[in-house]
Image: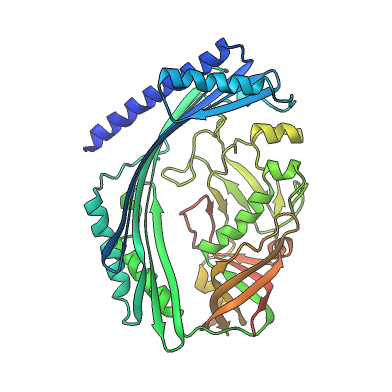
Length: 451
């Protein structure tokens, strides 16, 4: 399919979905709903996995769904369907109406305020369909895995290489008269291999993802990175139990910041189940820390012109000089807290952690006389209520600012509040593959438990 025909198809899908959600809202109003909203989506994609030179899976999905929520004053009812026929749409609306009549009133229920609706949707270049056939995807995955296995003769096995591509469209409408949507795409290539020596086996991986296929690393480069990371871990041993500086590379540092974002969500704030409860206005991070939300970055993986309630997204500062400036709110959680929505219904949009130094991972490692570089985290040992943090880990021991030897079967432990206070530096080697854009992070101290 040509690029022109793909664009025409997406335009036709958007118009059709706009008609569907518009009809749903009108049906809900005709049945007496005080307010109504509907979202409809279509998503299609291809996923291919090869392992040890053989095709393991080829999957194609083509999903669609519609959800409707109605409000009778402050009583709410929701229903959903994957059937877009007129009869099914009518039945779905009827079900939502029926549910609403039996629910208790909730003073915070209702649509986002009408004046917060997006009046225009800027083109953020989020849709770049990849006209790839299953045969082409298999060939790319084969090249990726072959490149990884060629790195070293000690790479004896593979967990496989995968290629995925999807494109979708979501349209939202409500009884304020708002209707809007946009197409988006996402593509990825990944590889994981296993190496063996006299001391045992080690496994590692690498991947890349982007809105546009041509923005990703080559399959060969991804495979080489996966192979090199795996071989580098051979000969790993346990570390001595100690309290030392710990360095997180960008792909793990963003998760460290992600725990704070989760703790600042409105839902956990009004439920009082957050280790950062009531933290707005409090200095949680060092003074050099700044975290900004930038929803309108072209082609970025978490960009969006509006949130899931139709509220216009906008730049904001979440952390300034280490001080929390507010929470992450949709309209419901905002009302529960007596605040205003921050256009985060559905999640955050490109949270950017500002670098505090020039240089990335290696620059931080050079600052460590003795400590740990973490390259893998295991388990779910994070208590979202207390902030207690204890996770299995693997990585490399640091001596005199240099990587000394690989380590495994260790645990790193602390409390997230203490960890945030102990951030020494943030590198400029930013990982742009997710919702959080962050460089490497160095912590002054954590407990590393090993021998």
